[in-house]
Length: 410
Figure 1: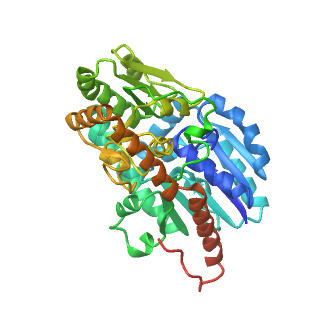
Figure 2 (figure 1 turned 90 degrees about the vertical axis):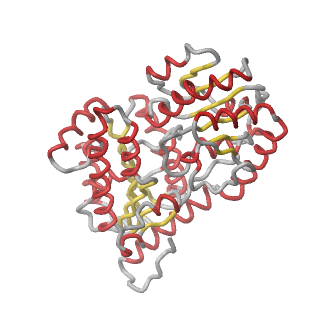
Figure 3 (figure 1 turned 135 degrees about the vertical axis):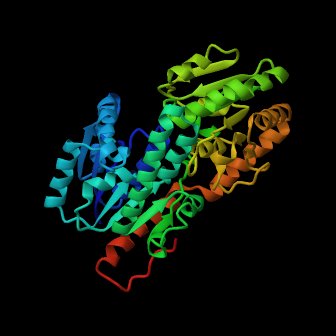
């Protein structure tokens, strides 16, 4: 197949949730098909990775995106009825490149990664497959419930507009994907003709890379070390670590005064940086190899109060054989057995009690880590998911010319 792949962020390096998924999609498809990749880079250092991607693809455009200007541009959508997210990721430079590829290439299909990218190809008469990943409209609905009061109406408006935009995409596209069946259930009220286009393509985890044996000299687990990983300028992650640091960790320190809480991830906000002034809390910023922090964790904590889909941080920690304690939103749809392959607790008292229990019972914690590794080995292999995505693309291409084609099961 000759494919156009559009992503709202450059799919390299695979150092955050959306980029991990888009990188695995690109790597799989580019190894088997001709791929023309168009994407945006919202931090200057990411522009340097164009050289890494160029040998993989037939043609490439990485358009710079200035977050400050993009935010101002998105506000202009307030009076238009358009989602702010669509205007945020709009780029004239990328649009010109897309138009050029559409004009000169005999493309078989277009793969779109994240809903704002649909605006670049509304007029294309080609099979369109949208990887929504998660239901973004529901994410903004959750933001509206927890954001500071002045922002709540804006976030609620974005949730409503995105929901309408998601439905419009489903009407125009040939197929769409989400990471879990639970995400698909959020659209259960859609007309059957639209819902039938939506397929589940789970995330995976690189089981070779995320393994204790892959480290030349893995650090020993620190007896009372708790680890959270993620991009620390992302609202849901910031909300989670501030909540944990303020309401959960002090309870843990009452029982284990030497407990440490490592907050591991790039671009920590001022609110996250301020947590480093609290006893026992370490804010690392960017780290060269995140596996070394998974390896030293007695427990990996994922106390997200806002979450969609499958969390890569959960899969990575499980693949490293570490016990994971997650909130229900952080592991909904994962399929792991609570208390066996993953710990689950909600609210500050329950989270603190379960952290204390796991820190106090090393045998139980290690058994959970072993079970976690076996679980992801069975259920979360990228190759399986990417073959499924590839078949959805093939089927969408065939369905334009063969009305008797059998649809891929949802």
